[in-house]
Length: 75
Image 1 (cartoon, rainbow, N blue to C red):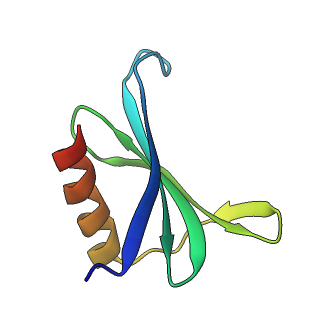
Image 2 (spheres, rainbow, N blue to C red):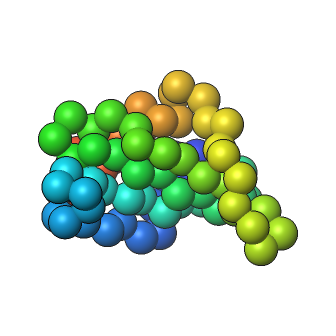
């Protein structure tokens, strides 16, 4: 069983001339959002949502790679 669940995914084809993919997911009962460059799936940014605000996410390389592979399969 996965330690995360993707709850939403958006493919933005007009983001500053570069396509991006944003995946919203839950991990350890916390909500996160991570945006990848669609061409190479490199991270653009990652956010954690806490108390009605967002802060830069501190995600392990392992969870980032799992999300990246899941996104790759979905696009």
